[in-house]
Image (cartoon, rainbow, N blue to C red; front, side):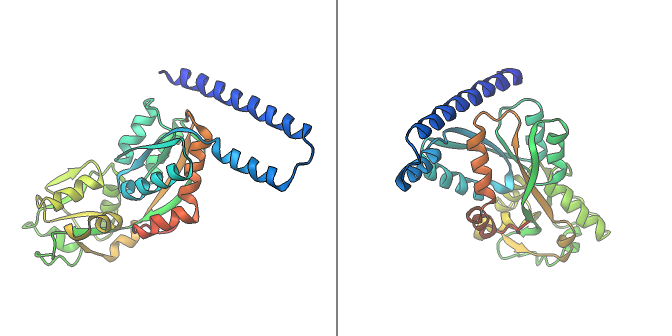
Length: 274
């Protein structure tokens, strides 16, 4: 389906919704002021109106927490479904500007979000909903005794970084530059989960990833904090996309992410509040 066709389809949906709202208003007018039970029923009806599938493109580091929130959303709104595409924020942004059908974009950096807003594919202004900080993932038990970012420059260590175009890679490079350290990794990975997997599979001795990824990996890896990470914290913005097919449902999912309930899930996963 072309982007023009999607816009036309969305217009028809909005028109239909407007007609339904007008009929509901007419019915309320004819029945008078109504009782408190009528008001309660109307509220329940409004909630039940949420339907359809919401497609969310989200940074790989959000996989665990967003999957949890997606299940919560579906339980709260029967008849809805939330599907996800997780990956490097730069790749996701390129897919969106290339016409891939999506309703919501949650990026791991303002820079990658700007790709989407500059292309005119966002609806409204993106809002920062969490922040994330880097941490060093090591082999379980940290057998190489990694204690600092500088230790990763040891040529005997196999270190993995995210690609510099990916937010976690850009943040790692910023921390290295601030410390005047040069690091030659054995590989650059396209998203943070791929970098972490290298350590989990013992194909690398260490990787610079996010705190949230070390947290999610449990005992599969060790974690080493380093002070330079405080100078390379990433803001995560989220936005409704212009060609969203189920706008109200997509907005409701964004609202959940930004709510106290959503923030609880995210902070428990290791994210920082915005």
